Amino acid sequence: MSYVLSLLKEIIEKRRLIWDLSKADFRKRFVGSYFGVVWMFLQPLVTVIIYWFIFGEYGMRTTPPIPNADYVVWLVPGLVPWFFYSEALNCITGCLQEYSYLVKKVVFKVEILPIIKLVSCVLVHGFFMVIMFLLYLVYRQPLFLSWVQVLYYSFAAAMLALGFGYLTCAVNVFFKDMTNIVGICLQFGIWMAPIMYIEDIFTDKSPWAEVILKLNPFYYIVAGYRDSMLTGDWFWQRPTMTVYYWCFTIVVLLIGLKTFKRLRPHFSDVL
View (tube, rainbow, N blue to C red):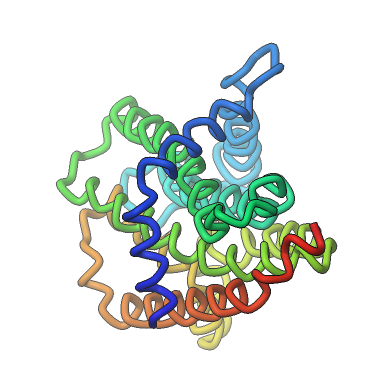
């Protein structure tokens, strides 16, 4: 637990530097690009349209388990946190190589680099949450006070990405294939959580399918986003899943931080 407390102290002390570098990292993504920030939205928008076409009105006609909810309204609260989580994990995994010139500086606290990448991804995620809220207003969905709860679930997803990210970015310095492994795992991961499909297609056939799906920690995030946006349910109405998720996430974060701390003295030698 000392690793977490040390990280929190570092974040508080370097909060201004983290914020400034995060904004610079956000702007750097679009330097030299003709369409600039448009690309930030284009790929996720195309993804939503493809899934909506395949599973929605014109394809397999997946019916959401929410009365009077269009498929796209049910789909977006699952995809928005996934876009955030997958982008954060990918960015954090390669952050030490990207900022190798900072890693080699003795006085720079390398532990904050994954935080900088995470905050940069949070800025992008904020735009997508605004778009999600606007979509719900356009579709005239009921307004719930629980909409504010997506901030809690976004924080939960951020902690999971950070935990895995500390592990993968540290290993990636010595084992460059880690970036490709993370990409492949994320391709599988989007199908291991009921983001595009209704989980009933599996749980109706096997009682173990529900258990397997819920063992995936991201199930909690997807279900939580939909609870917040579509039904008005709160996170304490899923007590078992909440406890499981945070126990899993804290263990991953501790393992990631411990691995990072142990390998950190060798980063500058390899980079």
